[in-house]
Amino acid sequence: MNRRRQVYEGKAKVLFEGPEPGTLVQYFKDDATAFNNQKKGTITGKGVLNNHISEYIMLRLEEIGIPTHFVRRLNMREQLIREVEIIPVEVIIRNTAAGSICKRLGIVEGTVLPRALIEFSYKDDDLGDPLVGEEHITTFGWATHQELEDITSMSFRINDYLCGLFMGIGIKLIDFKVEFGRVYEDDHQMHLVLADEFSPDNCRLWDVETNEKLDKDRFRRELGGEAEAYQEVARRLGVLPESGPGDPKGSEAVQ
Ligand code: TMP
Image (cartoon, rainbow, N blue to C red; front, side):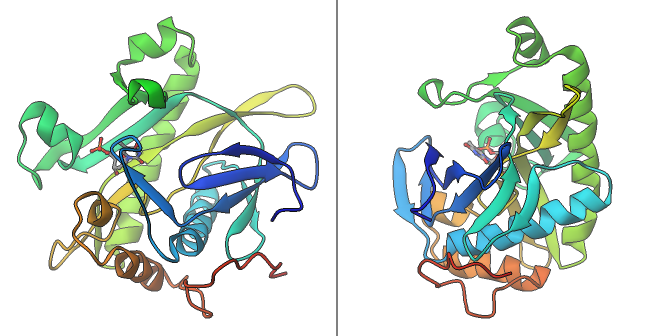
């Protein structure tokens, strides 16, 4: 992976120049952070697992008509993606109260919400990704009214579909965070695509029977067993790599 020029390094991923213009290689690290980088650690094998889990989810979403940045998985830790102009808004969908909404509004964790709730936060680490309303997004020009409408309908569609997908493997989708980006076609037409990743790093997954947490909350709350939880999600989705998630680099091409 060192052969390519690095264009961006985030907390859990690195982006490298892709083989063709308009593409990037997204490399998944084992690094984990929480509380806006205040807590740092590693979850052994997380990058390999998230690469496979996110590939699987993006492919399923493409099948139901959600455009994504995903092109193909390259190897254990890397996937080829389309380069997008990222919209600086994190979209959060909640089905059950957990995490920040419990603190903010005094709701008991585990309370099933009367309907799926959408929230937005402004993507800015220095500000701690503050919660914002639609008015802020359009007033400051982070997205247009039309884009926000499209983002909202795609996010609820993703939620409806993934609630069913996870329920089928005995997992409740409690909440998740997604990001969208703009892609410009050759004719300058723009369209929105789902970007970033979908993995246990950015959603909450509880076992249907036991309510056991199978996501990054194990790391955030120091519950232990985070690597095993990510492996369990991959195993239930049928994407646990045969060579095992502990693969140290895994950057050789698979196809
Ligand atoms: P929250 O309850 O902390 O607001 O998180 C809501 C969802 O968003 C949860 O599934 C975790 C995810 N999330 C991220 O992906 N990145 C973040 O920086 C934060 C704070 C949450």
